[in-house]
Length: 404
Ligand SMILES: N[C@@H](CCC(=O)N[C@@H](CS)C(=O)NCC(=O)O)C(=O)O
Image 1 (cartoon, rainbow, N blue to C red):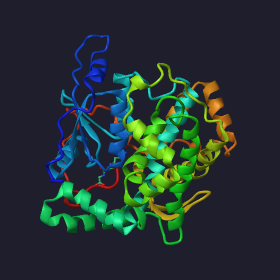
Image 2: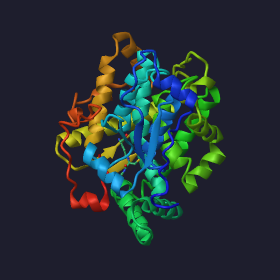
Image 3: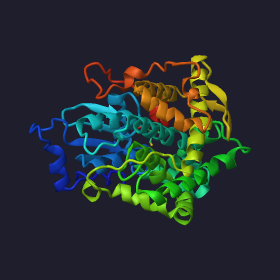
């Protein structure tokens, strides 16, 4: 694998799909096409986003990110993170959740949100849970086992620095990840096994739901699938230790990863058949959302509001002392509150009734709306005239930008 050798320029869609997606009925040429997608091939969120684009048949050219590309992404989006998108007419997009939202406005078929507003809200909530709550165990499984830390550190280093420095940089990067996301972020020797075991609970849930239907909410993938896909595809289904766990304990999940990655809509029934998450095997996940994830979002938002850089998270099944306060996740909570409030009354009632069995959704609104101050930042596409080209600090240039 050479540093600059992996920049395929072929759009990742068949000609048939291209025709279908790029020539909608309106006959207008799409000024945004083709998209350049800056990504890293072992990255959690790049995997999520590419799976989405592939399923929708949206033509794009993947560009593997190296130090130079990171610099460009930073200058245009203000954050050194992938995936990011540059459109053919020079617009920029970043962050998978608002990007998917924007792409849905451009390419509505097939929709990745169920038509029932109650189920659509649940899909968005699961997407967010997958994105944010599964990040910690994904970091644990990638960076705590030494084989994985060395292999992945080296792999990432190969994309960023020239050959003589890859081992050293890979080692430093592994240490940075442990400090930022594991031992420096509320994982201790006492709760380390709990974080490791979060994977087993997710696999048990996925195996149950996938034995009944091909995708989490029925016959077609929804944003709930893409949210879960992030950790499952590029981390748990890929890294040396959890990939073997998955192959042994969760073969249906392993199969779902390939199914989603290789999906084209011609192979699906014409009309989606969405399934309400009422079966018993959903309860453990609904409990985790209500008793762990939403309390985490609430406590994080409070800490943000009170100007605390760290807080002691306490949920039903876990405790993360001195975890870092994350402004981005204050924004995630705001978005969920907004989506909930946008639902018609009967849809809200349906959602409330479902979550009542887990203790109810009141926690989503505890202390009301706590503003992140980030709302304007995620209006996509970014406006090239108002976005200041951002200058990088030396710290970001040397150590990257782990936090949003
Ligand atoms: N919320 C963002 C997260 C993007 C993100 O965290 N990307 C990681 C790779 S998966 C990254 O670029 N990290 C750069 C770094 O750690 O320096 C999204 O949904 O796109």
